[in-house]
Amino acid sequence: MSILPPLAMLAVRLWFFVLWLCSFVTGSFVNDIIAALEQAVDCGSCHAALAPLQMLAHMGDKTFVKTIVAVCVVLRIEDPDVCDGAIAEQGPILAHSLRSISITGETATLLCDAVFGLCQPPPVHPLTIQFPKVEPYPPKQFVSSGKPRIQVAHFSDVHIDRQYTVGSETNCTKPICCRQYPDSSPPLIKPARENGEIRMCDTPGELADSMLEAVGHVAPDLGWAIFTGDVAEAAVWSLDRKEVSNDLKLFNEQLGEKLDVPVYGVFGNLDISPVNGFPRNTTVIEDAQWVFDLQSDGWAQWITSSSAAQLAENSGCYSSVVPGTNLRMVSISTNYWYKQNFWLYDSDTRQHDPNGILAFMVQELQAAEDEGQRAWIFGHMPMGGGDVLHDQSNYYNQIIKRYRNTIAGQFFGHTHGDHFQIAYSDYDNQTPETAMSFASIAPALTPRSGHPAFKIYDIDPDTYELMDVKVFYTNMTEPSFRRKPQWKLYYSAQETYGPLITGHKIHQDPLSPAFWHNLTEVFATNHTALGQFLQRRNRSERPRRCVGYCVEKTICDMRAFRSENNCVKVTPGVPGFGPGGFEDGDGEGWVQGDEWEEEEEDCEGVGIGRLFRKAIAGRRSALQSSRLLQTQPGIDQS
Ligand SMILES: *[C@@H]1O[C@H](CO)[C@@H](O)[C@H](O)[C@H]1NC(C)=O
Ligand SMILES: *[C@@H]1O[C@H](CO)[C@@H](O)[C@H](O)[C@H]1NC(C)=O
Ligand SMILES: *[C@@H]1O[C@H](CO)[C@@H](O)[C@H](O)[C@H]1NC(C)=O
Ligand SMILES: *[C@@H]1O[C@H](CO)[C@@H](O)[C@H](O)[C@H]1NC(C)=O
Ligand SMILES: *[C@@H]1O[C@H](CO)[C@@H](O)[C@H](O)[C@H]1NC(C)=O
Ligand SMILES: *[C@@H]1O[C@H](CO)[C@@H](O)[C@H](O)[C@H]1NC(C)=O
Image (tube, rainbow, N blue to C red; front, side, top):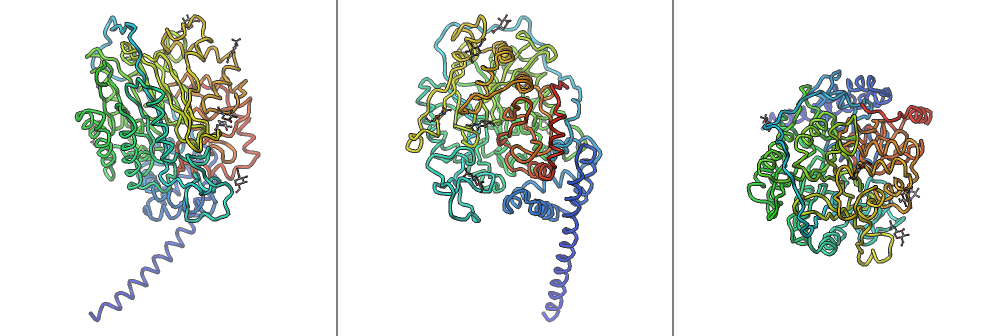
């Protein structure tokens, strides 16, 4: 007993010494990191800047997190609580990756692209995907017998904020508002109202209810529904495992209560904690089995027990034949191809198919072909954006090409915009004949990206081709919205775009890949039609003026379901913050004339990558920014 007090004293002294040492070391590291960020202006200097970051990572996760939080606070990148939360969640993943790689290698280049926006993606590593069987010849014909069409709902990016609070501030200093933050102070500039607020806030639970009720209302012959991911709100700095689990469970219940058809879901990048953080199976220190098990239970109400088991075993992927149809739904997790998933950078060994997602697709598409079925593929992130790793997008396109006769539709979300991307069997020769597939991308429910909207498809029950795409929305500016949101038809693709395509028989011909290709041909010359398309993309009040490079870039991105073909240039900075403007390839980034417009919030949320890019962008001079603008390249098909 008597020996304890001195030992305790010693321990306390030692502890203070360690604390002092730490603060000394961390203090100097804060300056080192800031200096490194200041010097990181291009890909080479970004690699150099990784040296102090890697050293910091070797000092342990705690020191790493503490230092980066200090950098975030000192540079006033976000409010201290946002810095704290975002970095505490994602920092350890980044630290782990930094400890595991060489700062001069290609993984480091990929990291400099994703985290700092300072390296362009490296060229694709050529790989020829092997298939179990050769393509059957002649291919099976799927012919319409003129049966009544089925309706299918597609909604996405619901981002439900269970803490949405009527009366809280809509114009706050955080990335999302309309909730009671501990540090929020009266007086209020603009209190949040019932049912949601546009641009700064995520979706209140009531608005999600309202949309789900509207789905049944506008589509009485609903066959099934597709949900392409992102349940949680974008306050990602406070999203821990408990909150994400709760958000996922509540939404599953809500879907079950409001819809009486099967709902086929996917994993969005926000449907895990830490957000974006889906570890590969080669990463032994962490796995995501908890979230796969959770959704395997949650979705079992709509899919068979074998599909639910498949989901739990295949990193969130499953396939399910819609009862009473000849259609195989293939749900894929796009998160292992998403640049902002920092687990992907924890090795210098390249993996062409992390967690076997591509192999899973091949297996399911082959099964569909063998059974004479048609298939729909659906996932969260469309494969053409600036946030998709080029290698996997390329390999994915090879799979689409092999099974193009089987695949009758592809469906995604993530960008929050209502748009499409076309896949070609030959990207060097983009014609109506080589257009082989297209992705229908659903607008978001969250008002953060404009008036809430969803899609209803008319489907031919023999071919499972899209006979029409109808977009429904609720206009938040109308007074009735506060009492009860009214959902109405915004437009029908057949009626709006059909008349622009020569020879197209409205409501008789399907909306085929060639149809969408021909529409891009129309947009190339009819800038009025293009401006209206861009207006519809986010339900804007006015058509957008789009001429010159804007036309080239917009069409280039529409014709790129393979990310190496898009016209996204990686630049430092983030949407809406300072010069630069990291383009997330999310279809929301766009150009007017030759000037970059302020872009919309992307769906990455306040990740650590965003914080770094904001740090770099924040201290760029106006001079640099004008230089950036001048060097903005034309269409660069790499
Ligand atoms: C929101 O607040 C900022 C500063 O706090 C102010 O500059 C801006 O005008 C406000 N916006 C609205 C719509 O009230
Ligand atoms: C990871 O998943 C792939 C694809 O399913 C599989 O081939 C591989 O054996 C797995 N690796 C480990 C370490 O589990
Ligand atoms: C649509 O996007 C444009 C450009 O980013 C923006 O100016 C406009 O306010 C957005 N519209 C809505 C309804 O959010
Ligand atoms: C697309 O345009 C080409 C050439 O103008 C035409 O031959 C073809 O029928 C069109 N296809 C569709 C589906 O509109
Ligand atoms: C261009 O598109 C608009 C509809 O967006 C249409 O009214 C107009 O006739 C088209 N112009 C031409 C020359 O086809
Ligand atoms: C929404 O309603 C307002 C007020 O009625 C109207 O001015 C605006 O054009 C509408 N917006 C859309 C996208 O329909």
